[in-house]
Amino acid sequence: MTILEQTTFIKSIHPFEALTKSQLEEFADALDIVYLKKDELIQKQGSSPQYLYFVIKGLIQEKVDEDVLSIYSKSEFFDTISLIENYSKHSFIAAQESICYILPREIFIKTLHENPDLESFFFQSISQKLNANISNEKNKELANLMVAKVKDARVHRAVIVPYNTTIYEAVKTIKKEKVPTLLLEDEKGEIYIVTDSDFREKVILNRMDFDDIVGKISNGGLKYVNENDFLFNAQLLMTKHGLKRMVVKSDEDKIVGIIDQISLSSFFATHTFSVSNEIDKAETIEELKIACMSLIKIIKSLNAKGVKVDFISKLINQLNRKIMDKLFKKLAPESLHNKSCLVVMGSEGRGEQILKTDQDNAFIIDDDCDISDEELEKFTQKYTETLVDFGFPRCEGNIMVSNPYWCRRFSDFKKQVYEWITQPSGDNYMNLAIFYDAVCVTGKRELIDELKQYIFKIGSTSQSFYMHFAKIIMEFNVPLGFFDGFVFDSKDKEHKNEIDIKKGGIFILVQSIRTLCLEHKIMRTNTLKRIEELKELGEFDNEFASELKEAFNFLSTIKLKSNLEKLDAGKKIDNYINPENLNTMEKDLLKESFKIVTKLKKKLEHHYKLNYV
Image 1: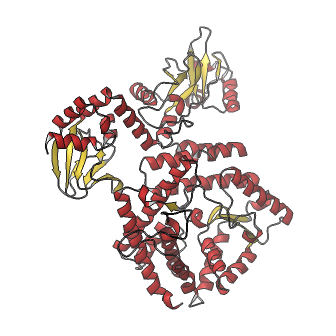
Image 2: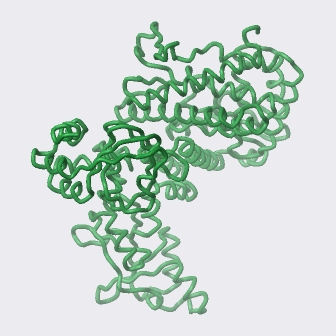
Image 3: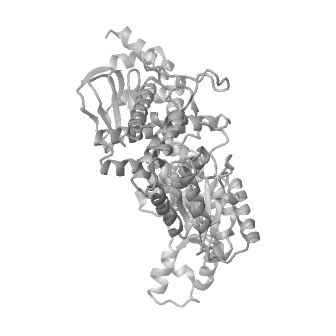
């Protein structure tokens, strides 16, 4: 290409239109062109990258092991984060024959420092990949290695006691204040630190007198960091000096807290460790609520980093269940603790609900549980109301423990299951589908397992049961036309030019897989794991099973991405997406996913002869 063609190409890619004329010319002079073979390794994980790549033609995959995190196509570039940090966290591989411009790292870094607009964009862009909240001025919790501040991480409260405090009083203070470390101040104003490990290793092992001075087991030579300093610098200092903790000071040179290695690690790992800890340590409902409110930050950060949606959903569901288990143990009467089973159902039961869309839960009580109806109602109402306060919306279909229909004795649930199967109706089959996805959150798991075995037993006695159970998928159409164009509902004025991705894709796939699993008496609830078990049973070949999993993950990812954008815009989350908001690659992948759903639907039509039901 000529210099003019090169400069025109670079300027057409945002944000490089912000380059000055001289910078653009410097870019063009430094550009080289490379031809990449299919499957060629471009940049290895753990390497020091040398170039910024601009894709002219082809397809590049960003991968961790075998997982594809991102795809880059024509007029896209990679990988600015690696260049800035001088370390490639992932590998980049040519998915097909490709042609790229390459720009030396030193030119990119030099221009980044010289051009404020470019520098601003890339620091913001990196931050968004690590934490989608950065653009929201109300959220100051920046998760980027380059711009996050010490105060953005979890800083432990500093408790300072006199150097001459006794060991016994020091331990009492640690327990009372609920802190992992103590700071000591001597008569000269010097600061020392003592940790729980000091008590174990120095006091107990040396059999020290508990009335001895705690200062004897403390450590001096502390390193300090300002709360407004970059978190990245704090991590460098800790690594350089081999420290586990640093004392945090304010701009006024006052001690404000202590930051440790765990706080740093949990911050850069999207807070999952610290939130899980907060749930475990929560002693009040309010403390549990605060921990629960942190989940949206984790979701946004993981999604911005390109973490696969099935991992996000697994992680969030584990945290949700910990919250529900802890809440149950705080609110439930003692008589229910070993005589009941709290279950979550639907997408929550399958481990596929990421954002809190609604409550889908039920409560199974042992027949011999000694609790009055009044006491039970008081608990279930309180439980539902508290979950609402925690951000779990009410279920529009009233599928919640506060509804007596979903709160029964074991024998009553058994009768209800029998009715769902033997008295066919749309509502009965839908209730059965929801209940089949149930998993135990806390309590006596045997209750839900036995009810599922009962479903298998009663269902297998009717030849037409599975046919009618599967038939509901025929009520929904995949929104893809004969010539691969998206099909919109012309009657839906509110969502003009939008697609209901749940009805048109996710539900058909989930219900199809659920029906086959019910027939095969599979206990698993997660759709991806169900697909794997069906493959092992010979229901799918390896290729189709892989396609189904990828289609399900992609549809879920697009839905999550759309709803996170709606959350940031203050809009209500729903199942609608506008294909025009997708890039070319996403549109193509959406069409491919719909084709796979159509293929599965046809398999079910043939398998259960749905056209004849």
